View 1 (tube, rainbow, N blue to C red):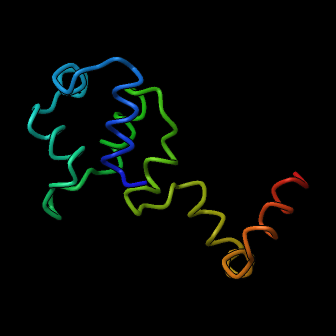
View 2: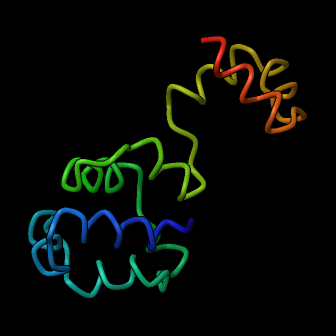
Length: 105
């Protein structure tokens, strides 16, 4: 799923219009429309702080939204720096192997 599609889905689940969401975030209606339709220029792409505010406004998982913007959440970034070899290993695992790791938690 793409970031804009997920934002639209979350907004609709909350029963919000684009206008209401824009008001909650103190941004323009056109910006919300551009976010949802993936029509942002590179410099306009949502910052981490905007994604944080958006997640709060939509009662959504901030990490999920950050990952959809190709940003790595801070907690994950920290662990990657601490254990890069573990993440390289995880990246080579099949979905079935990853599912087994998750189930062991």
